Image 1: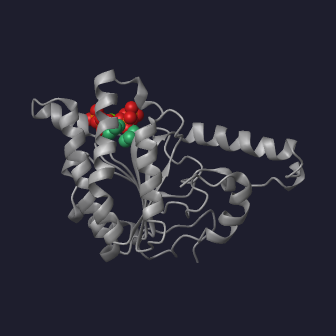
Image 2 (image 1 turned 90 degrees about the vertical axis):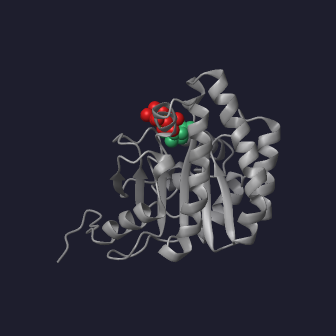
Length: 257
Ligand code: IPE
Ligand code: IPE
Ligand code: MG
């Protein structure tokens, strides 16, 4: 399925975005920076790709846990715009893993009612992978149980730059008046335009940084940085982090009375 153009976006996005869950409840949208695959493999004396394969297997358990745990939207960081800096062997191995992952998981994701979307720039991805991504989006387009978004060749700065370019084109073509540009306008041009903002962002592997993930969208997200390497991340730990989120007081700049 082709990504919505900005023209579509002004229609689809206005109607599709829902607000975040109310304070005191579990997160409706969880985003995960799945980090630590390489270290997990190295600790076992295995090549880094062994860790990526183990990491891919973890995704299934977490997706399956979402309906029970009240998570409607799950967004996972699979490959960043900066990850092309890795060795050719690792990048090629990851691309092959993504192709195999999509092929292997398609039937089950369809049957489980998971709606899959991809965010990120597809231009640099190979045609076979893009075709598998398009097909998976199309085949799951009617599903609504869990909305799984996979960030692949995704970087927030790249996303904002691409969005700004399209916004500028709309201004140049007279479709958008600069006077009407406000903080509601730009998100309609982002890859995430149909998604609510993340309530909770989790990063595994002990690194306390964002690495160019959902910068605009996570302005008011809660964060959890855990030491667990992604291939060791379990449903039980996921549930514990959701519990801890529920106890947080999200104020959004206001004062709790
Ligand atoms: C995350 O694990 C997966 C990707 C970035 C593709 P890493 O590969 O970054 O694992 P570490 O951080 O080197 O352990
Ligand atoms: C972030 O992890 C990207 C993904 C998890 C896909 P990295 O391992 O690439 O991030 P840095 O390099 O440690 O910041
Ligand atoms: Mg890493």
